[in-house]
Length: 276
Ligand code: XBP
Ligand code: MG
Image (cartoon, rainbow, N blue to C red):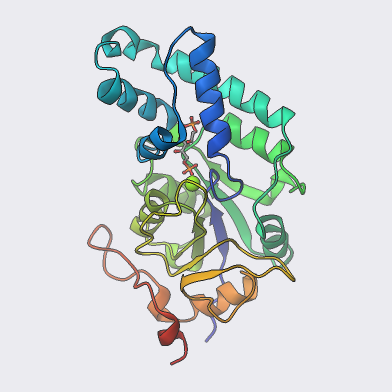
């Protein structure tokens, strides 16, 4: 019997839009506006991204790279981050922001075939709202039935909490959903919640280890513009479609195995296995 996916759960940063360069710009402009000589260049930001959440990233930066200034600024991190959020949303208003290939298409297809769509993100809710307002092609924000953002759970990714909360609000078992992520921390978070996960690496996560994802591809693909298949399911597809996801879900080897928290990684199947 074919399993039909009931809900698609999307990460935001790196998955809906490749946003981290905009986050980095917002952080750096905020530091400059406060007269701080902190500069998060690309190589450094790549390392800092291992710590999810802007406030957590700031605290880590102070402890690791600015230990002398840490006592002075640690209490101000919340305020610095609020300024950064204001700057980030202002940058989204100004810029031409595009959804990654296949995002708008897949969401439209999901909604029109009666599937539910949700967001599980580490970023701040205001950033999600601004992104959905300004990114093109336009997606009706009401398509996202459930949105759970970073500060709405106690622990950010790679903890499963944000996905657990999305599942709770949707009222759907993890095995009937698919998560779409761009980073190792995101894949880990979704897999720990028991959700079959597909990964589309982004600028800063191309070198990540996507162990646990049932498929890895360059992006979701568009008609006449196929994704580049990287690993797992989808070697014989051009686009990630709802029909393809239904097909993949019906193959039990893609589903997370074992019990919660005990090495809960679905096998990353190879193209060879797919032909069996
Ligand atoms: C991305 C993050 C976020 C952003 C910055 O996670 O880790 O911290 O870098 O956003 P995800 P904030 O891909 O899971 O959304 O500064 O608002 O935290
Ligand atoms: Mg992400």
